Image (cartoon, rainbow, N blue to C red; front, side, top):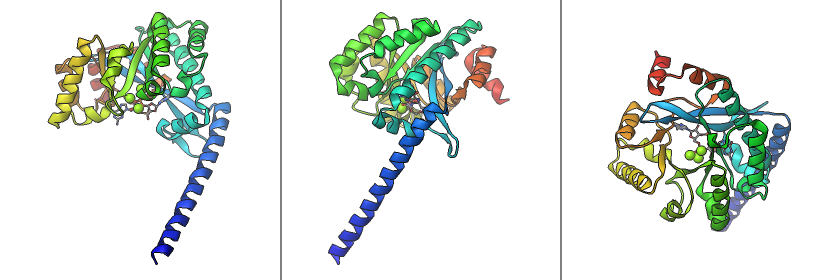
Length: 289
Ligand code: C2E
Ligand code: MG
Ligand code: MG
Ligand code: MG
């Protein structure tokens, strides 16, 4: 009986694997097609200076508008784009589109803000990574001081020395660097010591409970202090409530992002936020009324 159960389990396992494989192949095909068919678009979320209550930047976050399946979030397709290498094409498009968009906003006369772009390990490791960024900055005319590159520990883990070299080249170009999702992976303090980064982004899993759980509070406060002591600015991700906002402001967190300020918005809607140009939090309150 046990043997039969085992066989059955194996059969189910094999079927599941088969379905997963088919799904993967289909996704790969439609991703390729999606790139050609221009099915992707960027949304933008404000990065808010918590001291001045003003947006000092935005993060570009990709969305896939699938003709049949509708909107697909990056958590679902970026991992497949990474496995298949399609991320190189997607990443190139993201970089070009976001830089171009930021330059348009600056040229329109809105207060210049930085644009943050997420990088995958595969993009980062391409031999022409730095020269490609240079080219895009030249072609779009965006000043490099308005560009922030967001990296994760995955990138660092693969090749520490190479990562440091590339980051130093970006620094020479006056591009800023953020370490994203800090606190979710290995979060080695050693990285903070040796990586030439400017911003530390505290993952939203900390921020979720920062007003409720004393351990999360202790870790957040200590990390902010540590980051400041070594010259980094801290960005809190996923601020959803006024309570979290006031708390983070009080403990000297420099910057914040979250649904409280705005959800990631397509460029035309984000532009309305730039147009108002009021102190940020007040502006958001206006929107709610
Ligand atoms: P991330 O870079 O850590 O981006 C933050 C994520 O948190 C975004 O999810 C954003 O929409 C979400 N978020 C922002 N504020 C709040 C909040 O108050 N509450 C909650 N619950 N969530 C909030 P999104 O847009 O689904 O992106 C997920 C991840 O996909 C990103 O995480 C990033 O790692 C990756 N990604 C997005 N766009 C790109 C891209 O253009 N290239 C690459 N390589 N990766 C990207
Ligand atoms: Mg990010
Ligand atoms: Mg993050
Ligand atoms: Mg993330």
